[in-house]
Length: 76
Ligand SMILES: [Zn+2]
Image 1 (cartoon, rainbow, N blue to C red):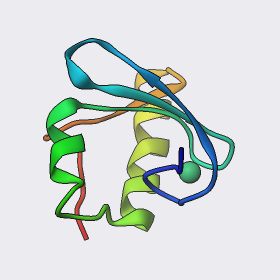
Image 2 (image 1 turned 120 degrees about the horizontal axis):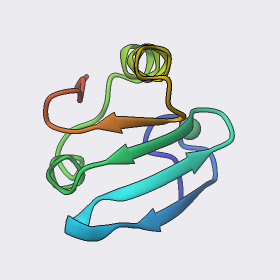
Image 3 (image 1 turned 30 degrees about the vertical axis):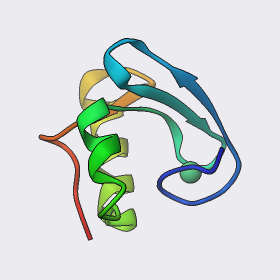
Image 4 (image 1 turned 90 degrees about the vertical axis):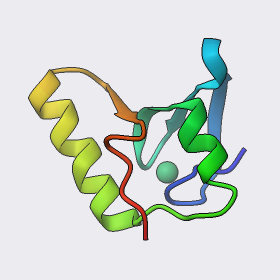
């Protein structure tokens, strides 16, 4: 599949409750919630701000996996 942020080739793993785990060599690993995936049909992420936030989340939470859900999603 294509990464939801940068559009490059990425690995997708389906998770329970309709969310997906994306592993992009450029953006890193992030989880997209099912609700956000539905909204992605009609909207686009603000790429630069979203990438900054994923970076911040990883540092703040000391995890490799950043979360994109209805609270953290930043739309263009
Ligand atoms: Zn990417």
